[in-house]
Image (cartoon, rainbow, N blue to C red; front, side, top):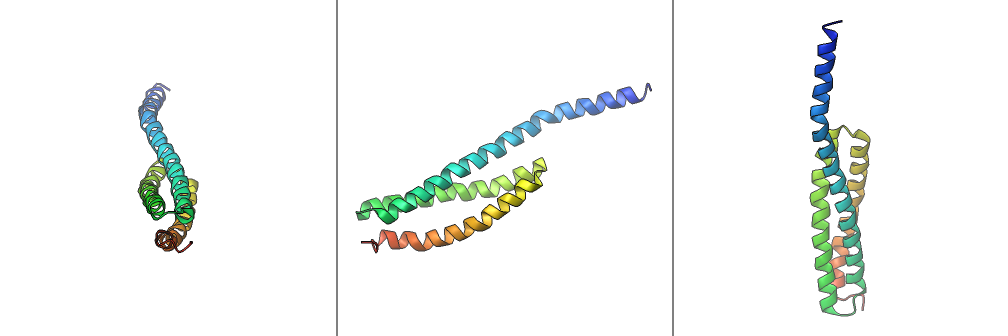
Length: 123
C-alpha cells in the first residue's frame, strides 16, 4: 500500500502538469476553427459581391478580398489538423478532412468564377 500511494500521486501530478498544455492546444484549435469559419464566410460573401458588382473597381476589389480570405482559410486548414491530432480528436479530424474535400471543390469553382466576375461577363 505504501508503494501505491507515491506512484498514484506521481501519476496525478504528471496529469496536472500536462493539463495546462492540453488546454492551451484545445484553445488554439478552437481559435483556428473559429477564424477559419469567419474567413470562409468573408470569402464567400466577397465572391458574391464580385459577381454582383456593377463596376470594374468593385468587382476587382471584392475578388481580391475573396482570395485573401481564402488564403487564411487554407492556412488554418493546414494548421488545424495537427492541432486536432495532438489532442486525440479523431472524429474532428475526419470531419475536418470531409470539409477540406468540399472546400477544394468550392475553391475550384471560385477560381473559375472570380476571373469571369472581374471581366464583368455578368453585365
